[in-house]
Length: 346
Image (cartoon, rainbow, N blue to C red; front, side):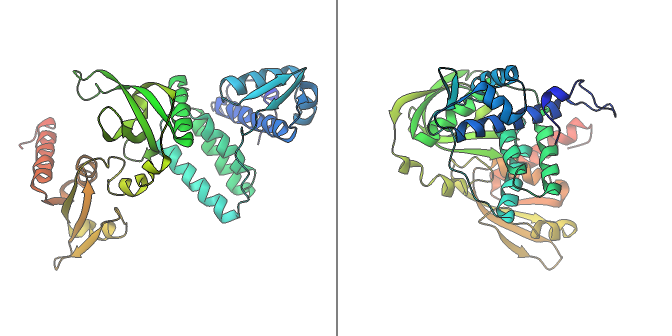
């Protein structure tokens, strides 16, 4: 890992590579060190003492403290020249085995792939994981954090995401402004009061989704976080047991959309891809039916058809929908339109 931020001057290294990600990594690591110092000194500590412990100038400490409060949302207090963290700023530490830390790392890697946003919390999590992993794995953690750090920051997304996290963790109703015009311009922006049950990453759309009870619509709904323009906590609370079945409900869907009726789906895969299909469990309800010609029929029961349709289309001519009829018709229409786009007969 590189030294303090003051030791890195340009924006490109000797090989000509962009060095900004490394600078952000250094800054995140330094923020973590300062936060740990504050956490260890419950009665507060002077900026000069922090500077000595972290190995930076007092001016850098002042700048970092302001940025940590402004950008990372850490509740830092100041009293008589001493700085500290509000009670509850950190969750209790975890004592991880190597294999547990590796599992968390893989989960974070999956989240990094599933999100297209700059995420300071994700970078912070990587920094902490790097501290407990062997050097070879820690280097891979840093490389992953560098990739995340290269994404352009989105203050609005960060602000909304933190509000939703707070609402979910504390059982608070959240008010959101939701832009529903992506697929239908006539729908515009609507305000909704939502009881958060889960925040779920999507590997299909590289986005995050809020799953919760929409009080205005009177049922569970799925909201893409990127489409939430603003979010604010209310003083109203709800019983956390309302969302107890969210994980089981999500398991019905193909990806994140689980608030639609469950339907039986059957897809025949050609012999050329049958083994690849069979080596993965694509859904909890999956049942495979091998055929005499080497093909395989995939059976499952899925809430909603849009997400599984994207998966089916990805297999091209090697996948044939057998049921339900409306899914088969939709796939046929998509393939006809694709043929027309390429100037081929439908």
